Image 1 (cartoon, rainbow, N blue to C red):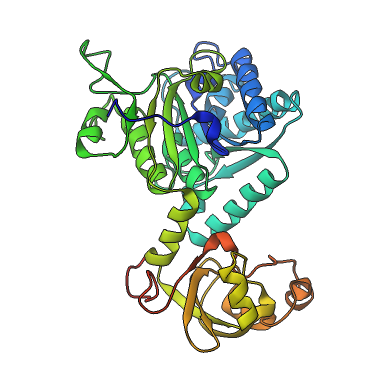
Image 2 (cartoon, rainbow, N blue to C red):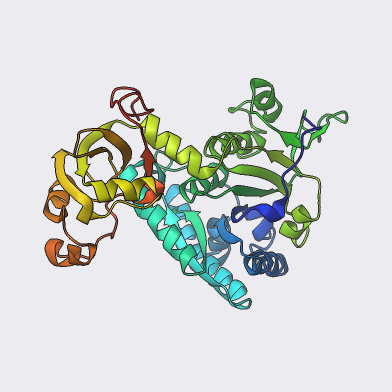
Length: 390
């Protein structure tokens, strides 16, 4: 594994950075580590200036809030954690806005729950918001919405949340800033012979065993969740790196060759997403399109309502639908941006007419090109709705 080549950090064009509470908040005082955040903002500004889009998944709201509310040390009750999160989120958002603002970067706060990344309709809403913020040159700052989440409906750690955000945003790299510089063959604090692993090309049972058992006290919120995050990220075409975040300028350190552990992705985020759409979702309906729309799809464009000639099936926004030619050949499969009854109303219309017809300003494309996988007929992956269900 050590002989494998590590990726060049500078080649990534969209990066998600996960920051834990311990890196951001002083455990003794409950105060924000402003010098560390300032250094991180400089790193982010440098990446942005080089043309890289950056998203941040940040913990710290509860830690900041409990200090501001003067809550005692030790475990908090659920309602106390939620109250601390409510207060801490304001302080955290202000800190990011001010710190990034000094580098002429605009921060945008997004609070997510587990349902937002698991339910397709809400997933698409969150994805569209992230894409719009990035298009507007903003830096999305994401956290779990701890003010409403309970133990039954939450991630519980921001490692896996960051992996979900990375795949949702089609990021090509996920950075987990940690208190350790990567994965070792055994916990280095317990085993002096533990060896650092520089590159992991495939997550095997052996790799999982190095991270510890899921139920062990040491692995809770530790290396096990990071390797599980790597499983999510790499399957989605996103490379992942575990790096130490203790020093100032941790992103610059990665670029300069600091000791880290890379988890290599198979393919790209776009390819992985299209494979998932093509083979992993049951179709709920069919859109028949004219020849012009079919040519547009094969040239890599989105499907617009003007090219839709017929709508069949019962589907909701976010469901997978087949796209067929007027001759009846299945040519694509994608995630629809409208409910079936809405789709029937706007089929054949210009995108500019959507607001007048539906009464609200919807999306111009009924299936965006990023949410569409081309097929070549009945034998293509995902052409049959019975191949594999989500």
